[in-house]
Image (tube, rainbow, N blue to C red; front, side, top):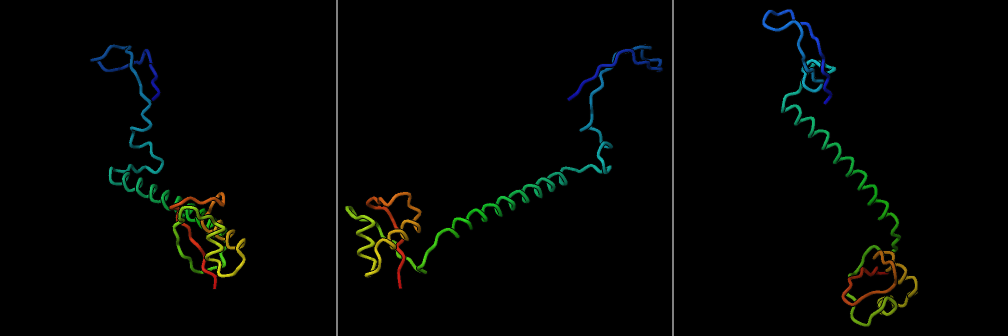
Length: 137
């Protein structure tokens, strides 16, 4: 808040001295007539304006979030329409799982599908880990 001190203000009232020291405060936020439209919002109006701005912000964040999620799902190239979920047993690897569940198909292709569907960084799996396995027709 800006403060300006004005010395020697002439006051023509008989109750005050001819010169007095007066402090003026910048009242840009306090004056009712300083709004550009000439209207001043009451408490309910300020609350409504705040809720509108917040709801628009939430909608924008949701739209950007859904767009980001859509890109992730678009990158998963799956040939299968249905999946089964298995729990990895101790001593199992992706190679043993793909060989057992591959139904005579290409094991390397099934392993690469399992890695991409489950978003695995490495082909290593741990006991107790849940994996989605695509079902081939």
